[in-house]
Image (cartoon, rainbow, N blue to C red; front, side, top):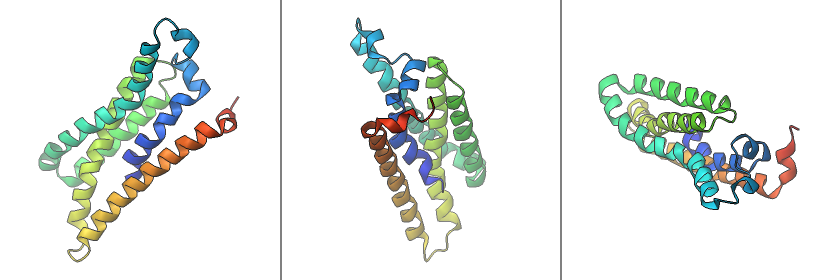
Length: 166
């Protein structure tokens, strides 16, 4: 279940920056950046990549949390950080700095989950199926990454789907 956290976030969030309402909220409109096209590219890149930045640090922090808190509490804390980051993203509504912070925050939780989940699975799975269980986790993670990329393509090539809510 938790394989979609990192996979879909990385694969799917980059489609958000192409939505017209998102562009208006976060000033990603090309006409507003004629004097500084590099600034627009940097702003867009920051929005999409700060989740991965948080995930890198979250994965590093998870190693220490696993030893100090245990797998179950690390798992619970990672879920809490990730979910609260998603809620902050939903309610950031045009506040650029808050969006960047929430992307890093949810990335911390998502990155930690990519470390905690396989470790947790390897502890609770029977020895006979342990390798297969963890392998299935990784296959599902990459499947959801692909699904996120495919949904990104749908939004790019079917613009009428992006205007569902006027």
